[in-house]
Each structure stands twice: as C-alpha cells, then as structure tokens.
Amino acid sequence: MSVKRQWLRQPMTVLILLLAALASACGSSASGPTVSNGKIQLKIMVGGLSKQIYLPNMLTQRLGYFAQEGLAVTLIDEASGQSAEDEVLAGQVDAGSGSYNHTIELQAAGKQMECVVQLDIAPGEAEIVATREAGQIRSVSDLKGKNLGVTELGSGTQTLTTVLLHKVGIAPNQVHFVPVGAGDTFIAALQQGKIDAGMTTEPTISRILASGIGKVLVDLRTPQTTQAALGGPYPFICVFMRNDYVNAHKDVVQKLVNAYVKTLKWIHSHTAEQIADMMPADYYAGNKQLYVTALQNQLAIFSPDGLMPAGGPEFVLSTEQQSNSSVQGKQIDLSATYTNEFASKAS
Image (tube, rainbow, N blue to C red; front, top):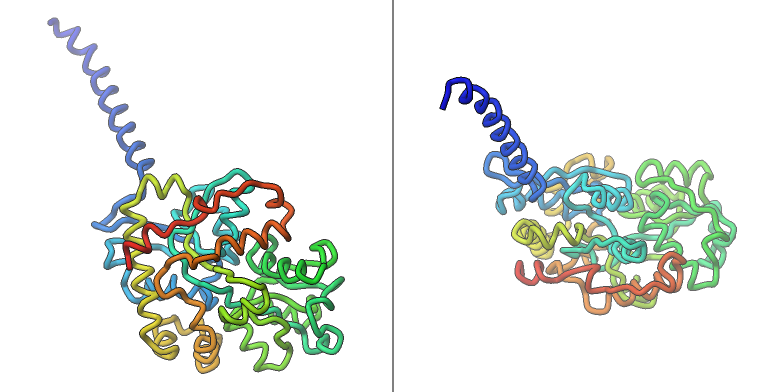
C-alpha cells in the first residue's frame, strides 16, 4: 500500500472511530440513568417537599436509604404533583411524587405513567373555610359560587375538591378555582379574602387553626375520615414513573422502591417527634411543636409497606368517571396505572 493511500485512509479511520464513540455515548445516555462516583444518579420532582403528605421523600434522603441502595437522588421541589407529572412525561426527571389519580387522567389522554410505590393511603388534606365565612359556609353544598383555593390548577387538591362538590351536585364550573399554593401563600389568600375556602395540607392546616383564621369543613387527614367524606378508600401521594422507563430499568426501580419501603417501615416504628427531628428545621414554619402535633394526628395516612391498598384504584377511578369529563367514557386499564411488583419484593 502506498504512503499516499495510507494517508488518505487515516482521516477516514479517525472519523469512523469518532462516530462510533458518539453513537456509544448516545446509546449509553439513552439506556438509562447515569452513574457517577459509583452511584446511580436520579432526579425526583416532588409536589411540595415541606408538605407533610410528601414527608417520605425527604425523610428517605435524610435517613440515607437512597445512598444505601447505591442511588444519588436529587429531590426537586415543585408547587404540586401536576408539575411533577409534566416533568416526568417530558423526560426531564426520572420520577415524580404526586397524587395517584394523575396516572388515570394521563391514560385517558393516551399517555402512560404508573405508581411504583404508594406513600400515602389517604389524602392528608382538609377543606378549610375562612372564619369570616363560616357562618354562611357550613357544608360543601354552601361552596357553590365561592372562590376555592387549590395548590394549582390540575393538582390533586383540585381533584379532591371536585369530587366533594360532585357528591352534592355542584359542577366544577359553578365555583371559581384559585391557584394559591400552600403554606404562607395559602394562608395569605385566606386572610386577604382572595379565597373563601380551600383544600390544603399539614402543617398549613394546623397553622390556620391555631391562628383562628379558618376552620375545617371537610377532614381527609386519616383513612377513616376520608372513607366517611368520600365513601371509599382514596390512595393519594405515590412515586410515579413512565411505564416504558420502568420496564426498561427494573433493577433501578427496585433499588428506589427498596429505599422508600425502608422509610415507610421506619415511620411506623418511630414517634412523630422522632420523625420531625429528622426533617429540615425550616419545614416546621417556626413552630416545631405544632408540626409534631399535626404529624401525630395523621401518621395513619402513610402506607406501612408501599403497596397499593386493595380497592383503592377502583374507587379513585369511579370518582374520576363521575366528576372528571376528561376521563368519562374512556376505557382505563388500572393495571397500567400502578404496580405492586417492586413494593412486594421490598417487603
């Protein structure tokens, strides 16, 4: 072979090697989460880290259970589970933490996402009415025409409110939903008269009650009160992922679920004060004892094992079919909206 021909082939060889390297790199990133410093890197978007209903997310991080499973998890705080759902679908994060009903609504829209571990077996929420309105608003029936606060439009808080309204014959367009967030922004909206009532979580509920600016109209903070108010079991916060992601990376999902199930078992073997001690101080909103009391009153909402409770999906679907026009008339495969495969193995 001539020197000239060798020279001509060398650039082509280099180009082929570069293209192969690029293809390999692209294939690696597309195949799943990256590994850095021996840890699998995951991003989880949470619909409000400081809300007690989302407590297992940060607690798992603080207890070191993610790390024990070989995971380096970044928890991203967002206003609600609705935002988390959008980011999971877009592939911007690996998982989201929000209400289970999102998976049903997405399937009705032709998209697939499933809960891989159930964190809460009841909503842990309450419909709060402003004290100044309490004389006129004595039941859900009195909410017609009122300004009702929700975390954000499309959130689990709006879904729960819609279900309550449907039970008394009030359509969603007969009230005014106002996105007001949670915590300080929800309290300010109640104080300033921007909302007459609203659905919110702990510790915001206890802060409102302690200040006297609001009262509980409907209590969904335990499985028992939820059953009484809604007429059935209503599993709420979970960790959801795209179905295709789960099927392609079962080993990673199992590690993630293992970590969460360890946390759920830890919760049920410790007191509310011991749990609160593990959380960031700013979660207490300036009153740790109030935080502890609120947590104690709703410890029963946390799943003992991460499994979807029997009958829960069926009841949530029935409420969606009755009150959500986007789900009505749609064929929903509930088996594709959640899985107990990983929690069963973790337990």
